[in-house]
Length: 243
Image 1 (cartoon, rainbow, N blue to C red):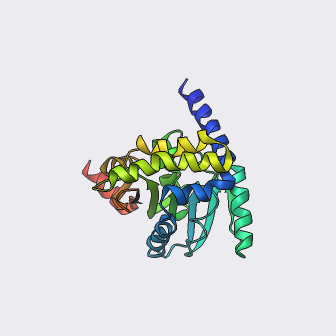
Image 2 (tube, rainbow, N blue to C red):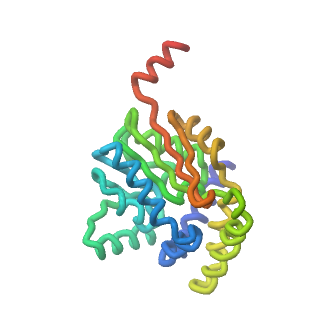
């Protein structure tokens, strides 16, 4: 029964993303109040500090994050073909040849421990199974490798009522006007409300096998950056000895 539910949810999300691929970049700009470009640059800088040779950008969508990560060879993967097509055309328009792969984040077609860093922007909250998706990204990370997750979160502080109203109401209206697909543009903002964030999200990352986890809020909590490292082989041996 659970497997059937996961397949149904995957199909629904896949179809939803396909329908809005041509307006996905605009949706991110509206949801982020135009700040998503600078947020991706922050992720890029964190990855650059690792001096990676091979980077995987999961749920790459139209390739916005993969195209600003300039360290090492970056591969963009996504299970939505219309998104990948947009990413390909966008890359060509910028004179970039971004390697792209059609792949389900819950079943990545890569061997264990092959990437120095894994990134994902605005994708994990759409996983049919969050814990399985996190575990899969950790699986393809080498020992000591870095996972960086950029995701929308619930606004905090004095501006929370205004920002929360914006996230709940403006994207569906913009989506309805531009594409006529109110359902898709309503789902994505609504999914933010039920997604784990802060310490809870860090605990999920730790359960997936990461250490040194952290959560950093951006723009009054509209988004957050989560980081964690796959436990190194030496540390794993020490912990095994302690047990």
